[in-house]
Amino acid sequence: MDFLKSVFTHPAFFGFVGGLIVGAVFLVMSWMNHLRTKKELKKFQKHLSDKLEMEGEHLARLKADLEKIQGENENLR
Image 1 (cartoon, rainbow, N blue to C red):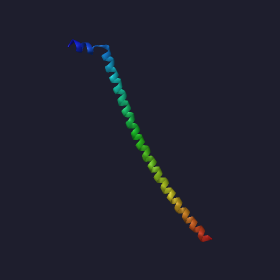
Image 2: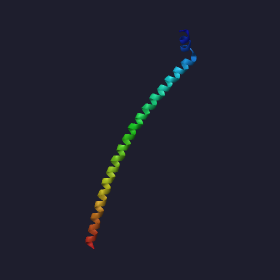
Image 3: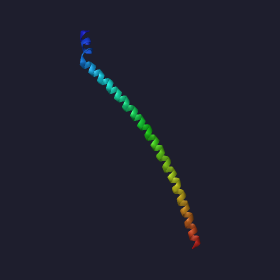
């Protein structure tokens, strides 16, 4: 019993416990930042997907217009 009391009252034990607490705080902060970054990445992926879809539709319209104009050009010759 005296051994446990001497271990738990030793300054090195308090330093060890303090280090564990600080490490746990940094672990929680790191995990929160990871979740926030993961959420932001999903948002950017959705934004990129929407942008590429809109550009694809626009490109398809431009190709259709080009074919139409080329057809009209051939008719005028």
